[in-house]
Length: 114
Image 1 (cartoon, rainbow, N blue to C red):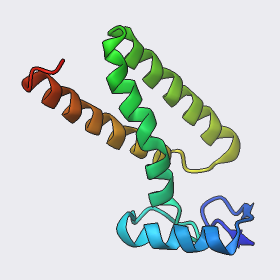
Image 2 (image 1 turned 30 degrees about the vertical axis):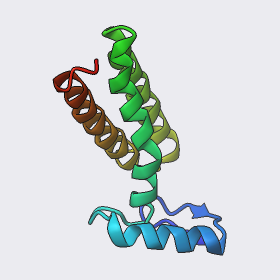
Image 3 (image 1 turned 135 degrees about the horizontal axis):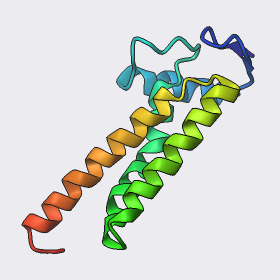
Image 4 (image 1 turned 60 degrees about the vertical axis):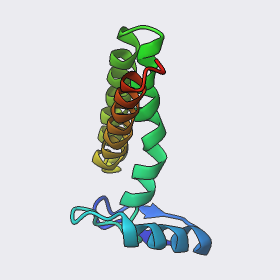
């Protein structure tokens, strides 16, 4: 059982999960990540698809990305208030996914596919 230094809450993880988190942390890490094992990289990777989907949803209607982003941020802020789980890590993953989505959209527009 590991204890998060940031929130001092006990988090139960398996040895395999700890190995994965430490492996990902070798490539994706942040100085503000005070958890042991560091979970910044894993949480960023988990939230990338949400940001990507938010940007790509503009094909349906221009309001969809705004609504998805608003709901996501509202949820993360609420979760951070109640669990103090450092929601900034999740928001960072969302932003990385959003940037990837914008790059994809620009590439699709420039190539004439969309």
